[in-house]
Image (cartoon, rainbow, N blue to C red; front, side):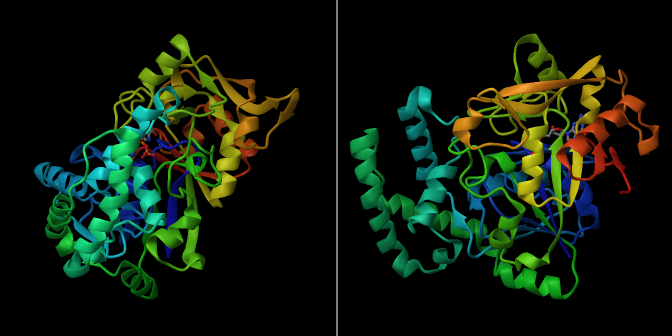
Length: 426
Ligand code: GDP
């Protein structure tokens, strides 16, 4: 059985916590897209961790964690995270890396920085982890696959070819130091040494695991609205954030994906530039940011303050639909306990007309939020484990959201810990 855990919004919905929790029942957890550009924050008995590339199921000793072919593999980051886990006493994690995964090169990170610098005020707000240059090279067919590390004879010739094109851009567009092919070769050989013990034919491994009836989780990064096709293009990430891509980025048959658990946050937050219709500002935003998540809404990778907003029915309904949601996990609901009244964005007004259908970017940029206000519950709901024990106004908030988005909320997360969860039978 294969289940996917993905985001409905702009990322940072709490997928890491849901994956860490559901991984208790899983045999294998697979990262299938993205790279070290977004982080999952996880709190459990070993401490607090910001994972960027290691799958969130790493904390159990019965699970195998996999970096799928769709991931932008930052080898030094992977090893840094594994070292940190070891230092904090997490039992030796079992990890496999796809022989078809491609590697983020040091020059991808430089190109990301140079391009953001060049764009100045038109920059994307990139995390500068090299993700866009990495995926551009992958599809331009000048990326380096893990399997190529073991083809030392042909490697140098390819490196020289890649350096030729990169150096033209470095010299004439960015006016920066040029790449030395010998340096790049050394970099790759360093990666080879680090990654060799973990390399695996992942699609075959997963095929066999599926035949044996193993329980597999696909772990998504970011959320629907950052998908390059279906998100707020061009303010998106560079690999698909959708559950459907799990089949490609892990190398499994699409029909094997059963449950699609879409994580949806009880309010909105976003990092980077781009339209954000329900965004709030000033003291109202500062207070939600301070109280949000577990210790404030600041980027797990960059430490940047996140942009804040009220729950957005239009974006979330679309975000859930485009994922193919079977179950919604509604998270960080506890954070809203301080509010007397809770505004919810229930529609977008575009050119004088109200819609609940999420539009393409040019229309989205013109959208104004239509707000409806629900009564708050004014208490701490952490520690509650039964749905019926939640305050009435809290249940009303959940049921209002559920009705408007049109997908069943079967899990409610009311705290950052593994046990802070309410299962709801639907
Ligand atoms: P992810 O990338 O989707 O995993 O999200 P992040 O890890 O960036 O952001 C989620 C933040 O909220 C983390 O700090 C989590 O520890 C925290 N978190 C997750 N679920 C809950 C919850 O139900 N309540 C609270 N208060 N914090 C939560």
